Image (cartoon, rainbow over all chains, first blue to last red; front, top):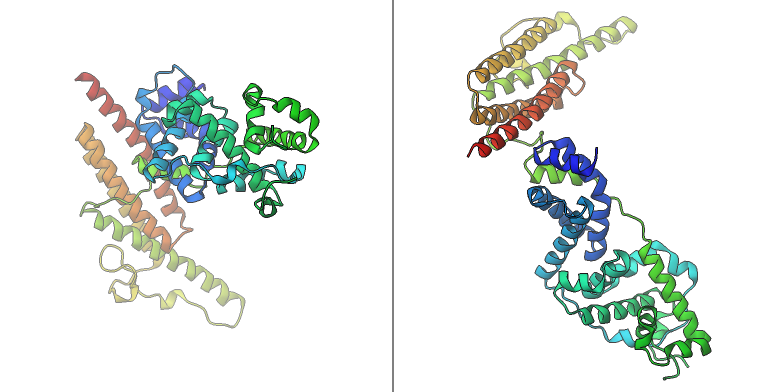
Length: 182
Length: 231
């Protein structure tokens, strides 16, 4: 059954169709939410919120985009709203302009668990932009539209976030904080 | 151009090299910055390839609950007449437990010297009234098999009267009322199953109730939509 058929059935109250839509998209929704909010418990709450809103507003889905795109957008917006309510706004960290320290090992960079942990350690503002751009593939224009910041701010935050990530992933992070390398 | 590029500049080089004057040339001459550029690039690729995470176990159930769709949710207020049904179900559970214990006892008595429960020492089992958890308080003196069959018959009778009353009241209100009653029955069945989890009649009864509630919820939704469309 296609998404369109599932959506039509779900709108008519067919719970199996709703369950099928959920099953197909739950992983992607939870992934983006979890990475944006940086916390398991908060992510569970936000992800649930997104799905509840989705089914409550399913009648508003016009089919201009795929259900997956619509749902992803709704999930991102739900996460952003929650972070806004919690007063977590994009910020700037003084550590962002450090010179590069000794490079971490390749396997460190590519270790997904470490990447996830580093993402969680980012400040909320950096994390939101980095996840939306580098993980989810949104453009700066899309990020600006959803977050309400200027395109230039989104770009600036992205580069600072990446710098901070490199810093967090570096085994010699503490040494690096002492100053520039020669 | 400083001695080395900082990480923000290196990130910028990945996207817009023209915004870092002299940056590409510096990379060509500086192995350390070139290595950092490479690592930054690999990090970006790794981020874009992060795998999908598994949603939390039970998320769908929680979503259904929040949408008011959970078929096994506990009703806010069960109708008073279902207190009787609850007692019948609990009695069935107690009898099922008792009968199972009796069988084990007979088997044990036949196999060894240790004394086990015997049908001759059977105490009374309440069926229709009183506290079903205290069989010794009743004055009824009947065999468990008979009591169990009687309880099952009572269950069926309750079900029949329920079906009959529902058929007399078509419309959304009747659907909603029927769902409320089913919720109460489901609740009572689950309570009874806590006493006798393996009892096949109770299990079958619960499955039927859940299926019926699911169907009714769908019918109610359709009816409400049709009613809304008429307006």
